[in-house]
Length: 488
Image (cartoon, rainbow, N blue to C red; front, side, top):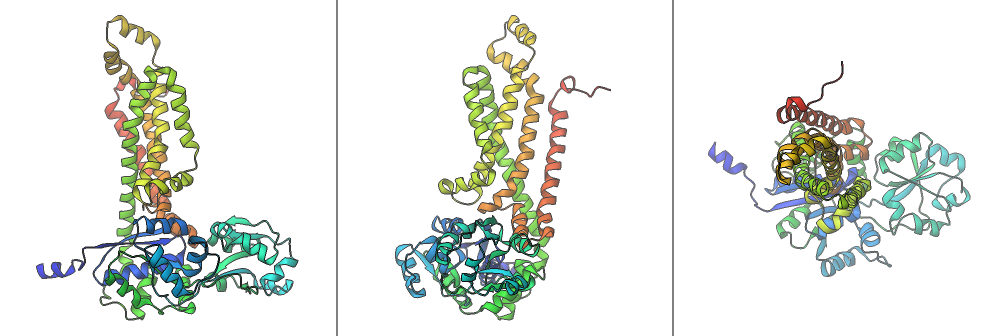
């Protein structure tokens, strides 16, 4: 048994952090790399479903991830913003010499952008290539948010083809449903998307060769060990366009998990030494890990917010002249959309847990601060005068009279902040902090309500659990005579 335990330990102490963007193909490729390296004895930390290209790239350059799958055209146009298209080997050399990054050889497929319309619509309107769109200025475009802003995206494309439409920004996976339901007429697709066949779409030819090649490959930091690069190079040329379409279809249509799709691929290519692991058995373990991560984020952020907001609430109660500016400032933080606040945190604190904790901390401040301030200010003035008449000092009045009387309302503010934090923490997955939001983001990208429920239901149960815990705390901490009973 001891020998078995010894041999079951990872062969390498180095932990490799693998990231991916928030669409299925990127998750599948990242999972393939992760399982291949795990099979060779490396410890893998998965940071999948990060917001988009820039977040992944910043994570890589800030050493918060070591590898993620990227596309040559995206590096050329969206990251480095090159004016001329280099060859693949020139791009590899540029990254290695100027950016301390290495673009390994391609997996083997070119996932270019394309514009797609319903096949019957293309036939009825005689649409064959993208130049044909110019004669249909009334068509409704639904384009992914990233495509709208990329250097190789909507604006230069519209200029090249003379298009005048005002496109609607949409989540990529939801655009397929919108196209099927005739809510939009044109959408951007990745040429390896499985949904192209599922929804019977027709891809218009890029007759002006606007899009460069988008060869997929691992983008890796230079300081990662040569052994890791050597292992990942075993994937060179192993995935052609048809293979990638099949992998995407196995997730989008056959409802396989990313791990199951990656496992099947690696086994079919004889790349695994150990095929005994059953990835489907990890489902409940993964749920428990994500729920625990979610709970940790909420608890740490809430405790930090209490440590700051309660003393601050007492200070502004004693110094009323500064109360309004302080409350207005914390209120201002609350008005920033949660996903924008998380994105703002990336520049100073990077992706991951720290940024998520700071954002959750800032969101929890206002309910606790305002309830503390309001609770102390609404204590009966007669009681305050009596305490002064008794000769109590300021600290004694605060300690023995005011805080105990304000405690029920202060606890209500903490309770509100805790429940808000449980909901807001689902967005932490956007910047790689994990938690139950990973299910929700994955479900949205796959347009799969069942996967969304895997994150939404536990999050709702956690919120109910938090409510119950605070109800018990209230009965335990607050004297019975201060607990108001409902009028019969």
